[in-house]
Image 1 (tube, helix red, strand yellow):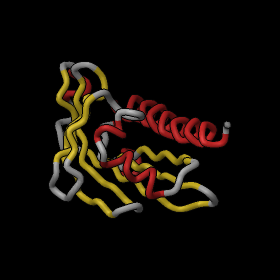
Image 2: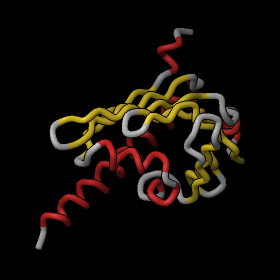
Image 3: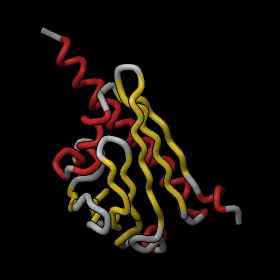
Image 4: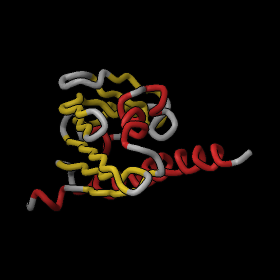
Length: 148
């Protein structure tokens, strides 16, 4: 199997500078606005990355790279009662997020690699939804800042 076939890539524009977006990738309280309901994060290489994405489905891994305002990478797998998710053991796959200043905001690129074929569709769908939440959060924030 071609390694590239096991990759999901998503890209969104966020109406906020990379410094603001970056905080939402490393701060547990801020992450709740776009991903999961409970997080345990230690954003440094080797530090824990754990997010309860939905009740009983916990994504777990560790940060592999944290470059302020530019890049965050962490391993990803599941502690889950769902057999399909549980097949992707914690730390098995890799999520890489790049932040690039663009116009008056940030181009966010997400790449999730080393996924089993059967889990690519659900991960692709969910990453699209989560990134959309993050994008909308900042869009709403900008709108509130402009209104009297």
